[in-house]
Length: 297
Image (tube, rainbow, N blue to C red):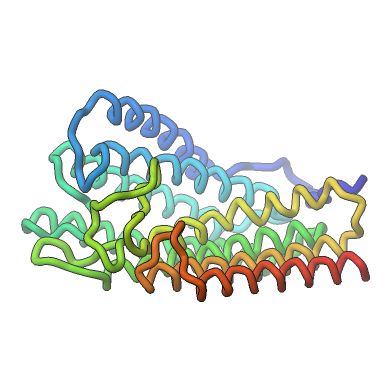
């Protein structure tokens, strides 16, 4: 059985403290928001008012811990990457504080420019997300430059970081959608925000929703390393596992783009038209065919 060959360090593994603090703090906020969902009867944009901080807190739990793990297994510590972790912590504190503040006020946080104060908070969120994007770029560059012995794991980390950057970038599409005098963007396409949505996620069931591609893209950060781990439990040679990770990473990126394309055409996730189904089927066929060819060879 093949195991993941992690780098051999001359110094003890040291986890990025800022990212671990982010993970722990987000766990606490997750619990607080979960209580709020049931204890606070207020509804905002068609969902419990505490659902947004709950979802963002869970996202930062997963995001913070995953980045901390990635930095911990790199062969060499990188000062720029370590500082990027502190920047991400600062950005997360700003984002989550604003989201919770607006929940307490009974206001939406994203795209809200209804009052000067709302506009200031939204501007701060937009700026902080840009800072987080570039901090993530720094970590991605560091991972691309370092040599991780297990090539399948190396490419899973690199592609996970890069595809998650794509997911982040797609989030900026939301600022150009819809718009009213009180909001300068929207996540729904073809229908107003706050309409019928899927359980928990709230993704629109009557129109397109740009949050889907954004969400799936961000979680490449976990999906591709998990793929590498599962492949490590097989008897496949390292070169085969590496090629399968490369195929998986490419297919994942195309999937993110297809989901965004579907949303921009105002189609709900679970109600694709024939053209969308053909595109998804083609992606599945090409991915399966390429994977079978790599394994067979």
